Length: 389
Ligand code: SF4
Image 1 (cartoon, rainbow, N blue to C red):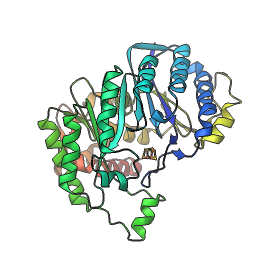
Image 2: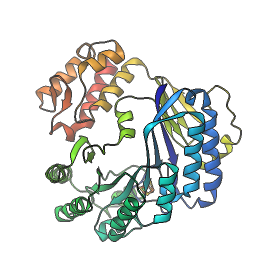
Image 3: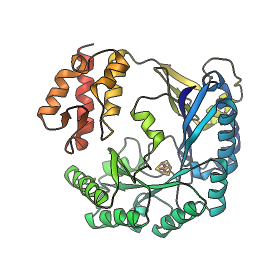
């Protein structure tokens, strides 16, 4: 049995948030049913990959998977079960918005096999929630957590955002403290980024909104790291903290270069060294999926597939591995690529070490300062890989 994970993209949201550049759409509720059927068709069309695979994790992301009926989620899980073997204790995770779920809905998800849920809380401050276009109240977050626990979902977490324009350290501290007080199992912290083409980027261009300065953003990240450590949460990745045993197994597959199928509009997959990407628009995706049948080849919902050249593959692998706090032993690189790490990336790694960004011992990992500069490290690795190609 080959270990495999599956990512399922649900592109629907109640409101399109002004800062969001994900493949997510509001106002497409009428497509939900046909989209679920398209997902099932795509799962079946990957039969040649799923047969003989042991599915370790399934992750429903989006968009907002919690906005589609639980029967649709169950249908996709059942389709995966019909084509592959679900490993014992497989993690099945789903993202949802607090405020738009009920106890009955969560019970149906748990019955379908969902054992991990992450709520897009973002903030416990009403003004910040309003700025972010989020449709839930701070109170809804605690209520959603309680309902998820009552439904028997084993791991319950939430996401918070920092670095918002005008955000005060006091509101940031309150949000992190409120999450801790709820006893969440997992917390993801994301800095607000101004993405080109979003309504928020337009407001910044028109000088209606002034982004928070980078030093304040970094201070918020470092402060939260301290608060969460003091509360007993273990940071295991740049943006992720968990109580012991509640780390996301699905996301670890991405960071360790594991294989995963991507199913759904705009989903990305990585199978046996090949990356691929599905048709992005839900309507076009649904249309293409109508003509799908298991054929032993890549389904026609895939719009782009390519095998990264070796320097790019090595660079991707190291960059992702450095997101994990434990980093990686050089032997893991050798086992993967048959080359010595220093032979390939010696100069940029030495530079990063000299700058105090990276430590090199039994494991190569970022230092606490380096965690703020992961993007810089990635740029250096890529520049070196490109120059020596
Ligand atoms: S809920 Fe999430 S995915 Fe949907 S629009 Fe807002 S940020 Fe984007």
